[in-house]
Image (cartoon, rainbow, N blue to C red):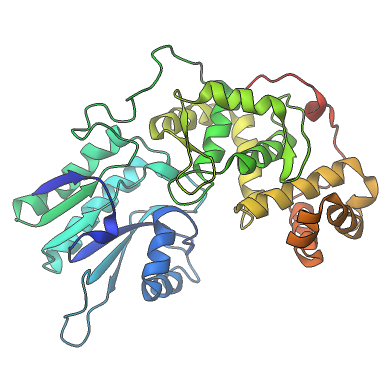
Length: 368
């Protein structure tokens, strides 16, 4: 039996949980980060399996929590499914299809009587639930025929319960054009943030500044802000996108932006047909790396802004440290000289410190 449900994957009484991972050995966001916290031994096995060579997409890595007599607390098994090569990549449908078939074979080989499966490839993976659901149901069908209980967890954004209106409930009827700027912003938002909730508003401003500095002509005017960089015109852009491509949440007390999975899929297809836009997006993602937190993005954006306005700051991080510590009491207390120097080094290593025209960030209009 395959039952489509919603809620907390970890509260289910099943023999196995499916964990979507990348092939690089990094559990740093979304559901995989929760698995890392709850099952540290699984994380260690996964990291070891990815070194020195990364796991290939569709691989299923089994972690058995059973003791000598196989009677460990449920779930006994964690089935780590590689849905993409790197954590910042988007998932591929072919990887999901092959991976879920491998899951079914693993479950049958180990005589697992029940498992819970998340919406593989949705959310940060960029795939649409309406596309992923039939792939998962088809791949898991052999288990239903064998009387294995399968709980398939739909994304929280898919409504109503029968899934006939997934990701469309409550959206405006008038279509909004998916411009290149909006598409790039959606793809950046989809690989940022905390869990499934998306990045905060402050993080979004800093992300967008980095994208514009990568060469994307967004024509936003950024100004110093206590939380990094702020573009007044971006707020209007985001408000227009709400209900069409994303929604705004505040589950943890901070406003966050959560892209719709189908909008991310459209954005992926749109950007993939434009090599220049794809290159700018990749350049921004590669820069971000381990600076994905709110504080990390704030630090990268702030250091870059200083470098672009102070030629001396391109030569050494010392002037940057001084400027950030004078920026505000908050930044002086939050960022150490070592952290600032690390961000400066990151920018230098990725080729962001060379002198560039600042015309694009000074124009008051926006095309997003």
